[in-house]
Length: 288
Image (cartoon, rainbow, N blue to C red; front, side):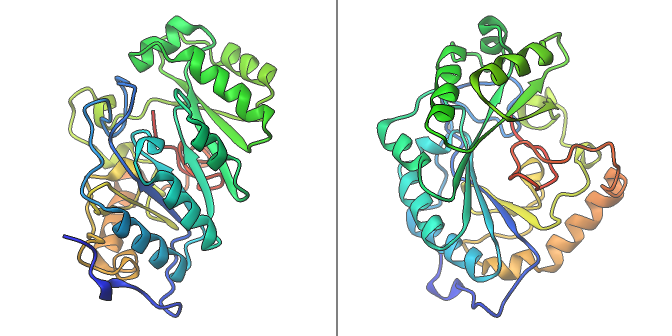
């Protein structure tokens, strides 16, 4: 069912949300054992059409959203990825693409160099065998080469070093990336959601506590949640309800209140500054 034409919002309908994660697809070349939303080669692009995503971007810009992060899965595998990025940029939105940088087509390199776009990726170890063990694919060499190429092209890039807690060397990984010219680096840990939960039910207490504060996520099937880690907390669907109504609605407020209570308020200074993948300054950390 396509987004209804009357689901648009006017510029007067502003919300407090400034960052939207657009979870374009659950399809990915990798099969990371800790992937927070269980993406992989068998994943799909969901039910949101190009028209649906365009409508979401139009509504987002109209209601005050400033930053968009395209995420997945591997967002560059979505057939409308380039068109959606261009539309977001044309609306004046700042765009970040969170890619595994395993396979970057010539077209994607062109897109990555658009003004107003930045890149983000994950890195697991300077040792290929350790990195590849995390991704379940021989991916280290290609990701590392593409990180180096992005730096060489002057594309704004941040890299999250993911510490699995299994002895991978975050210090050595940082040194490796710094030698490639990466300047924006931070270390995160595996989050217990999706495959990373090892079969356990999602627990709000494992969220950072700041989900839904100025941010929200939209799934490949149109469901809205406070963040990409809390996708099971569906607060509405853009397939049937205007985005601004969902973001300012009672269901979102109840979800946020529940998260605050379970996670201890989300104002602990020891919490990560940012969600990985979160847009720089989002203060929250998703992804593999």
